Length: 109
Image 1 (cartoon, one colour):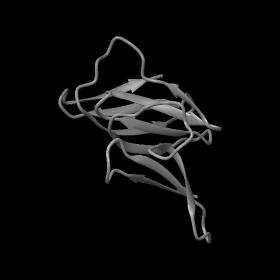
Image 2 (tube, one colour; image 1 turned 135 degrees about the horizontal axis):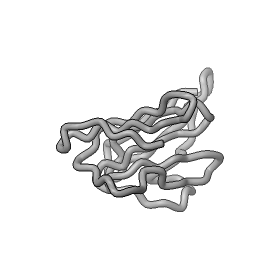
Image 3 (cartoon, helix red, strand yellow; image 1 turned 90 degrees about the vertical axis):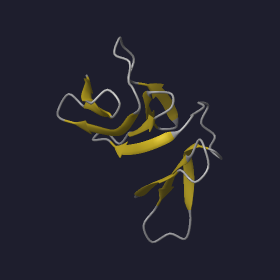
Image 4 (cartoon, helix red, strand yellow; image 1 turned 120 degrees about the vertical axis):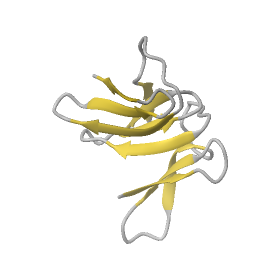
């Protein structure tokens, strides 16, 4: 499966494209059935648990998407300042966000 982030129009959308297929489907964002609004999708990560993690830059948050259900996963006291990239690694599935304006990498467990 190939994941594509189409940011040609705000808020953007996440497309899932199956290998050897002629079309894909919209998982999140414009044209999806997901019941969560996004402001400006900037990055996507395919996690180790078959979930997808979407970085919503303007909303300064990361949303987990599993089996059609969305969950906000970066709640806490740390305020992101223009995040630009997301990754999920390790046995504890820690979420790492590159926070450009904050000049830091923020880790969520």
